[in-house]
Image (spheres, rainbow, N blue to C red):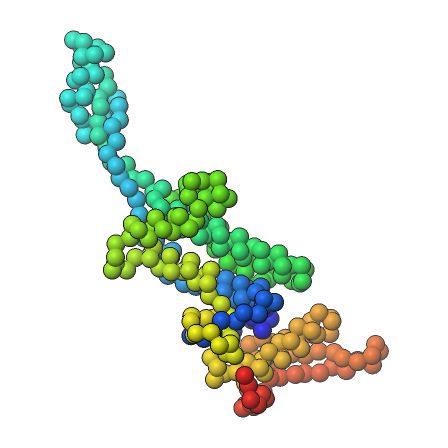
Length: 296
């Protein structure tokens, strides 16, 4: 169901799936669908809420730096150091250079590094899923909504303060730096002010969900926790559209699908022996209350 919705009707995925309290779905064969659903579901929170707030209030450090400048200087002159250097290098002459103190903003903070690491990891996860989709769907995968997610990550990484951190972030992900992503998370968590509603706090929580959010299961006996799933009250409706999408996907792969109006849930297809094919029109009747008795 997840795969079919993302392949053919991504907007319906957004209105169908959400975070709910339930038991964990432990079926190993569904691991890829879990990753597909969670990666796509979390995109809105990251791109529309967390990252805009991070860009508006980027963390930075601004240490005082001692610089040697030609006249006229831009920083505040440190006269004692300037005169000492002048007496040492050019005794009896006016100084041609002065030593100044300046504050320069640096954006290579753990918080911003973690943001770039997150974007790189998120893009890599989406690209892995797209490769799997391409293996199944071929050229049709170019229309998959995960392509937009990959492009969105790339656009964010072009942001000037992020672009300068990409190399260091790659080193962290690849294990060539002193810190691993988990170490970076710990440093960010330690530096954040308790009780303050920070976008970096939300980024840490988002990373936890990306790693730990599972698909919903209603038959296991484990304690309820945050899961990604649909409203149980809509199970019958979801069962109907699942059958509809399975049939449409089958007809599309068989080359028998002539037209598919996704919004109105109407499709036109051909079926029959060669030379005697009949044309059919199938429409989902949303007035049917239930097709599935004793749903789990």
